[in-house]
Length: 127
Image (tube, rainbow, N blue to C red; front, side, top):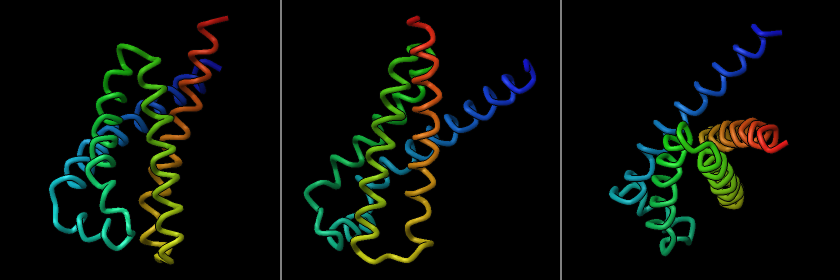
């Protein structure tokens, strides 16, 4: 039982590390690069590019701060999950290929998993 619990904690920590690295990278990329500017124009969402990049960067920071303030990590993971869900829907609407959708879907799944696990921990600590 203890070993399974420890493996789950390691998996959650690894997921949080991946989320932090991914969004700490993609947030600024979204804001600063011409490639992302063109992508958001293609989506018809150019007015939201800076907001999305800032939300991604804030989410990365929230995941990191969540190590000290668990509720913040929970909220950050939930927000990133919603953001990536909208990204997946946008790519489906644009009829992008499976491989183009896969990164957003993977980040959505990881952040959803972290949100769920963190939420369970927060609820356990309240009862």
